Amino acid sequence: MKSRLLVTIVLSFVLSAQLFAQETIKLDTIFKLGQRKLIVEVKNISSATVRYKDPKTGESKTIARKKIQKIIFSNGRKEVFNKPVLMMIEVGDWKTVIVTDNKSDVQGLYALGKVKGRSSAGSKSKKNAKKSATIRMQKRAANIGGMIVLITDSESVGGFGEPPSYRIEGIAYGFEKPKKKEEQK
Image 1: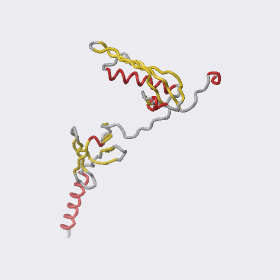
Image 2 (image 1 turned 90 degrees about the vertical axis):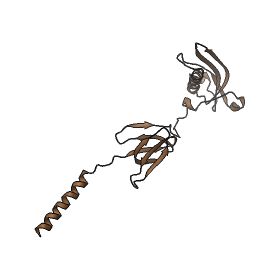
Image 3 (image 1 turned 60 degrees about the vertical axis):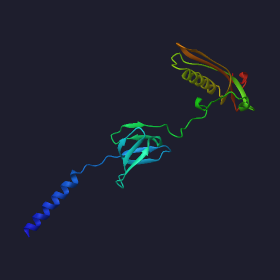
Image 4 (image 1 turned 90 degrees about the horizontal axis):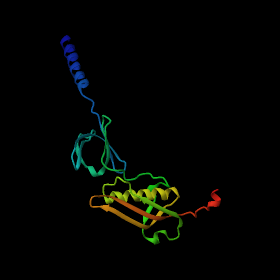
C-alpha cells in the first residue's frame, strides 16, 4: 500500500514538473490587407512569403507578403509590409485634391483662384521634382477650398548635371460658389 502511494506521488510529481517546464508559446499577430487578423507563431519571413504555425491546429502555413499589411511580433516589434487598403482622409485634405488637364472635368464647377507649385530644392530626379511641385499646388488649392485643379502651365528645368526643378500652375475649382471679398470682411 505504501509502495502504491509512493509510486502515485512520484508519478504525479513527474507529470506536474513536465507541465510547469513547458514554455508558453508567445503568439504574433499578422494583419492582412483588409484588416483581418491572424494570431499565429511566425516561423520564417522570406522575400516573397511568410511561413507561420497555426496554434489551434499545429499546421504550418504560408502566406504571400503582398497580402500582409503588417506583423506585430510577441516581443512588441512591428514590421510593416504594405500600406493599408483603405485610409480615412478628411474632406478638405490636400490628398483629396484632384489634378487634371482635361477641361471637361471642371465643367459646372466654380473657379476659386490660381494656384502654383514649385519643386523643393533638394529634388534628386525629375519625377520627384514633379511630385513635390504637384503636392505644393494641391496644398494651396485645399487651403482655398479647391477640390480639383485644372493645370494651365507646367515646366521642367534642369537635368544633365543640374539639379532638376519643376514649376506647375493651375486654377482651383470647387463645388461651392466662392464668397465675395466684401462678405468676408
